[in-house]
Image (cartoon, rainbow, N blue to C red; front, side, top):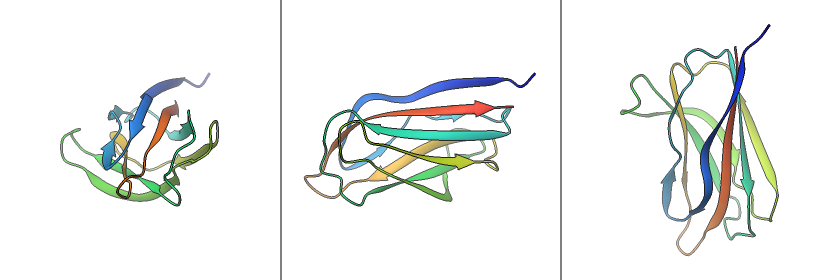
Length: 110
């Protein structure tokens, strides 16, 4: 039987400027799906969040995968990962005066 878990990386957070989710230690998992949902309409047109990975949860490197930051209320975007090391988080840089309120969840399976 496979193990799975869901972790909330950002709950009801308003993103503006440069933001990062809480990091998640996922080294035990084989695959991840990260969902980003807009809780309210935002002004983050065309913004993509970057997946970052880390060996220690302190020093971060862009992994290369991105996920669209949703603009409309209840709009959801996601990305899948299968090679991510141990620690994972999302980072986004929004343009001046842009913001969006989000919920970010990570779903891991071993």
